[in-house]
Image (cartoon, rainbow, N blue to C red; front, top):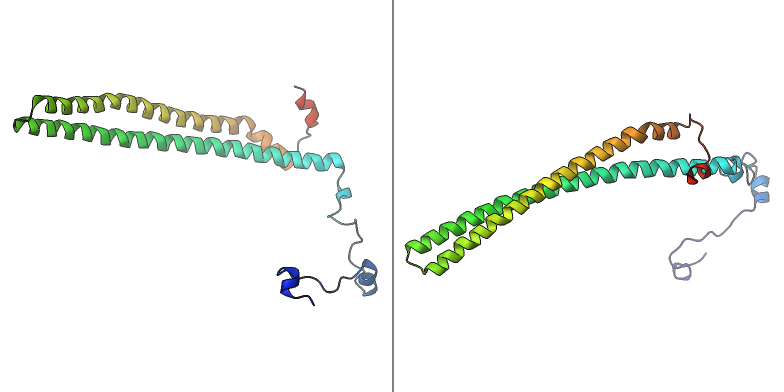
Length: 178
């Protein structure tokens, strides 16, 4: 028996039976090598290749739908984040204007109060850009949702037919020349 240090911690077999020894032991109901469902010869090469193609196409179809959905959610989240920033910037602009008014009532230099009002005006000017960004992100979210829905509508039946195996499928090479 090997020790742990000799095998690097792996458990190694101490006795492996040959197929003749297995047969001699009475286990004749086991499939011979190359027989059964594990054998590559069970399916014709063109059929097994098509199965792989169908599975790959189904995964691609599902990934496209999932990625469009994820993009739609990301755009909605961006739109909400921009709207949240919009609200925060508006509050900051009001606060800066209020501080400028307080400073003016305390006879602070006009250049200081004017700078504060200018800063508040700059904040408000950026709000128009933020509002446009939020609207664009919301519109993109809707477009991603529409693209996912349209993709499912256009190719969903094809994907189901391919998965069920009820439809005859042309050779992939035929499509590759289009």
